Amino acid sequence: LVATTTEQMLGRLRTTLPAVWATGRRTLFGTVGQMKSAHDEELLTTTESTSVFDALMVMNEAKHGSILVTDDKKELVTGIFTERDYLVKIKLKNRESKSVKMGQVMTQEMICASAHATLTDCAYQMIDHHLRHLPIRTDAEKKFARHDDVPVEQIQGLVSIKDILKHLMQGCEGIASSEGIDVDSLLNVPTSALIEDAHFATIAADETVFRALEKMQEENVGALVVEAVGSKVGGRGGRGITVGGILTERDYLRKVICAGRDSNTTLVGDIMTPKPRCVTPESTYAEILKLMVNNSFRHIPVVQAGNKKDLINVISARNLLSVVIRPEYVSIFGV
Image (cartoon, rainbow, N blue to C red; front, side):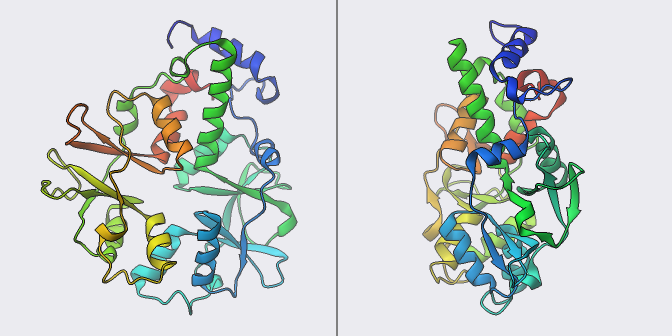
């Protein structure tokens, strides 16, 4: 920490955030039930008999990466469906989204969080089980358990990686403002800590979108860096690659599926986000966190400072979250 000791900062947290301070466990987050009750969001659902295509249209309209699935009477939540599910279970298996029903491809036995689980607890679950979203169950005794056929009224909502990062940013900004200090002094984490576990893959702008989807699956990434014309072709990257754009799962959903385009004939360059915002190794955790949360980014390329021609890596929202729970940074984040 800068210009303060860990114990001084923890003391300020106890004073500033008494409602979310757990005895014997430092936490800046409070419980997931507290956070969601403050937002009071409407539950996004569809039914088992709804076509995958129609459900994707609902997800796109709401700008959500997942949707809960109920029985046709809308009494029980029976599963969850995500953008990644569409990629793996529908498109790359050449199934037709307008004829496949949600009940055939949803994920059953969802991992649910109880309303009294902390957001720190949820962060551990998301990282350990490679999840982006956790349904919140109001009546669950265990903090986390697999459930299916949950009464709709017992689901409080969904918590996402973005929710936790946003909560972290707002909490630290509040502390920094009340104390008259820079947020960077609370989030004193080097960018190197974010990229050491990250990896990326690239693709050329003249490849088809379908090939891009295959590559996302092969590399297990949610986004591809699009190589600028004249860049060294690098696959998983290397020095010499210039960032020309970025292509994400959300781009595919919004610009291909919902726009009625064919992924076998549409080119990556036609739907990519050109000239994406990038950060450098000198960027702070706070700067990257704010950029990601305020712009609803899931991925941000890291490039060399100065000429910005060399792609170094890609930081994901998951990378930001994983740092929060690493032992060496527990005292900084107060988790």
